[in-house]
Amino acid sequence: MPKRKGRSPVGRIVVAVGSTNAAKTLGVKRAFSTLFRDMELKEVDATALVRVQPMTLDETVEGAHVRAKLALRSPGADFGVGVEAGLVGLGKNRRGHYVNLQVAAIVDSSSHLSFGFSSGFPIPTRFVAKLKQGREELDSYTHELAGAKKVREEDGIVYHLSGGRLSRVEMTEQCVSMALIPWLNKKLYGLT
Image (cartoon, rainbow, N blue to C red):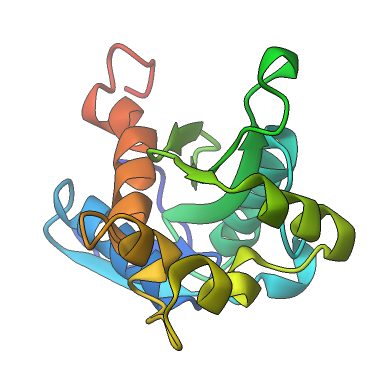
């Protein structure tokens, strides 16, 4: 357990999420609830501090980290969590091939930091070019990509592209669960 700051009740942890997005907050809640029984979740709007559409792994990781650090500043927070979705190119030998994935950054009140990743799904090349030009969010192409007039925030485009096999909430839960591994193995990661 990280050092306590603020006024969180003994035994209860406070998890601050650097987002007000329902898919992100629900995914974070699911992941943390497997590790901590008594948990309070706080939403912290970090929208103004991150890029609209990260286009590289570095930008995506940085966005998640910035969100986590901002969230940890929330009064009483034991953990700050940032989740960022971005496009990642698959290298110079696979030009034009991009996947969309989510990165989670978790920092605790003792300054322990960890990152985790979700599974990724391919984005058609023509949409990558549009995103690079306009720096809009992938969600602005929902209708063209998914053929859906409206996509629930919790489902995301991935839900439609995968035929309902995976949702944005589940991708968030994946990356946060992976980032929580050091707290599941405290001795191994030097968190004792």
